[in-house]
Image (cartoon, rainbow, N blue to C red; front, top):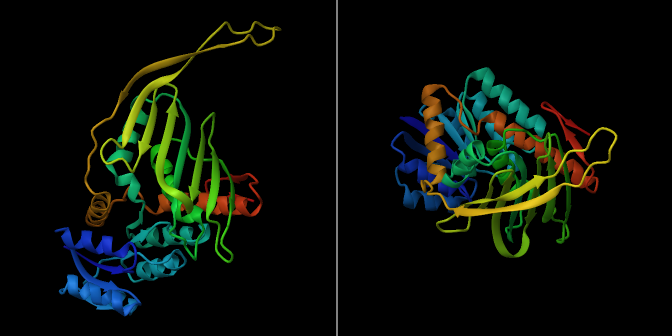
Length: 345
């Protein structure tokens, strides 16, 4: 049984605690938070779990094998690095760190010590996204676009902008779904609240070939929308995360091109565009809670010395894109190119 301590009992921490307390493979030993009233709630619900405001107590406890971090983004690096240096496996809420350099150091430290570093990219463990990956690999054809809208009214963050808060979900989904990685990104956005970071933004990611992705995120929308379209040459997917049952709909729709190719020396002949309209299919999905699946995978990886789907490298790739988008945002949408190991300014 793997002993775990959870740091942060604010918005997401209670979900971690609830799931870890239910997993037979885990022993929830500590919950740490700086706010005493939050810890009082832990004491009432989980009387056998130790509570503390001192993070070092978790690191010093030899019965704690792993640390789950659900604290503000700016603290991720320091807390995760302390845990790794203490010999603990680490599970970090998204995003992995607040900069590419910090994320790289965490990946290197985990590898050097042979520890599991997992990032909480929850959506890639949902039945809907897993089914999308299966469809993309088997029947979508050549990928054309990924188009997402992720908007709602609030919650305004004080330490990160809307890209780091909401777009990170789509970036992690695309990293899992798409066979290619982006080569450049541009972003525009605006803050409508004085002293606060950007509350709305538009990201465009460029991929090799004819693939393109667009993400619209907004904290200042009158309705909550979580809708994604993925278009291919053979089929198209509509993913609506707010749908209670039919979250994934696969459309056998598209275009067909006809016409004679140009002969040498001739102008390009006009291509005729036809439209193909077929059936819509809503596949059955696995409704297992994603966080439970994700944490169970984390525990299995610790026992087997393997790597999770959203390992440190996946977290690093997402942070690289976030960093590039931030640079583009500061330059009013200038395209920022990406390389495997760095962002080209």
